[in-house]
Length: 247
Image (cartoon, rainbow, N blue to C red; front, side):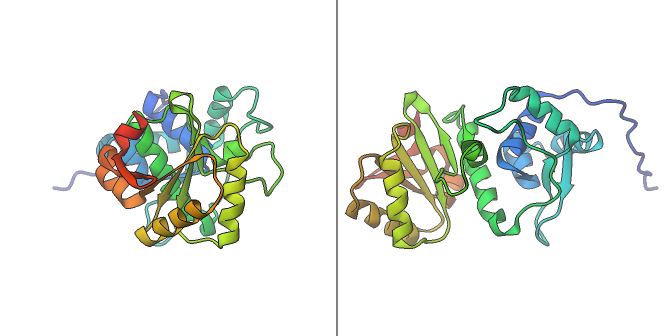
């Protein structure tokens, strides 16, 4: 006999450390996809993750939306999630008081945003990054077209700008980006995480031709996901495992 499903009689939810990390990441990045939540924030503990997600949705900390057919649902901040984020950033960040409740996700930047978030969660899980600043946080308080990286963190007091690159831009666009980083005193290194080897090779060639005063590092996105701390980082003409570069 099939056991009939009974809806849980939850009266309240106690926010745990993983819940807090999830809500903060959604606030920082705009949204987080379900599979990334289970894999990285709940470390593949699927049953436990599903229970926590259901509770956070039930008590309005998260709101689920579908973006692409066949993809897992994504999570935005609900009203209670916004209130919790306000406790993290009580005086605002460079003009950004806190995120607000959202209702949709921009399809044009969806794939790129998912990969930026996965790169961030991977770096955090490997203990290479404790103070990630998202593009949304970096752009807060600036005027429109100001160039900021996809992410920024400071290991060993050296600022690293992260660029997750999936498609080739115009050469002139890269030249402008190199100029911005050349003149930015807070950035010491630029880490390009590329979607393909031809793309990585092309950007490396452009860097070699340009006048740059910062260190440029390159790695493949798929290698980071697959090999993690042993993923290869290319610096100049040498290769190193990322654990030796960032630890």
